[in-house]
Image 1 (cartoon, rainbow, N blue to C red):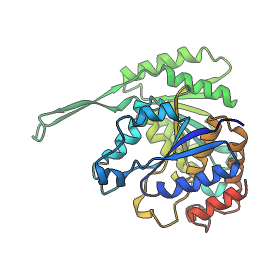
Image 2 (image 1 turned 30 degrees about the horizontal axis):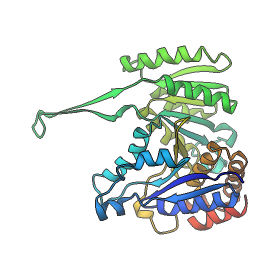
Image 3 (image 1 turned 135 degrees about the vertical axis):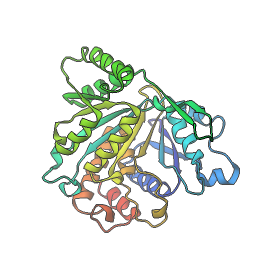
Image 4 (image 1 turned 180 degrees about the vertical axis):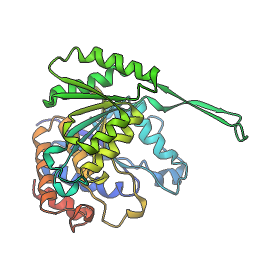
Length: 344
């Protein structure tokens, strides 16, 4: 009997506690050889004993688990959101999950806010650098709490491995184009590095077409003509912004899945949406982003057939309106996931 893959589960806060169990039910229905271990890292835990993540938490995840599945983190009872930062960003940085992979695929024409755009027109992947840029908290404040207060936010960029990851993903998925987005016309130092390394790496993949756009132009063209895109690679902060815009093309954040990946280490998967406290506990949150993230996780772990079954069931649920109200259905969170599980 094959050894089961071990998955750490962090439902987190808000609607995360609803969409994660829903997604796990769908995974179980595939029969994939996996086992789940849940961790109560959340605002509730932080408010109870002051713990964000145990001292050996990240090392334990990498040592004992094949993947991590996270719901959502953030709670108004913790105004600083320190627990969310230390858990979520901690995983990305401490576990060196340098590639944030965000598939953008329109499942039904009714979900896209753009006129006349069909499912075949929106099918691309954004590869976002996940551990560098301005999110490293490097810098400081001078003359604090005076009229002359100065904030210095420093950025760090290496870029070669994330660009190579994008080309390898394009090659693996049979995609034909990789576009790099930066702001090198204004940010000449970091932008110059992105430009130079992109050209060097691209030369190793002559079968893949390459293109460059400034990030503001990319945002415009995503709205004007999304069909032209295949794989987009960009920096941490630009990727953070453009992926939310891209999510709108597929029906909103409730539909968006993501993986935080290191090719040779334990990786983490999560729906893109936040914890959405006003909607928590009402059985109305859209579970499809979480279910699709679980499918990404299964594929990453080698369960290709099971992942494909989930993707097909999601497509059927969307087209038959067996979904939550935000995308035209009438079902609750649990009922949507239940219908999906039964129709694998």
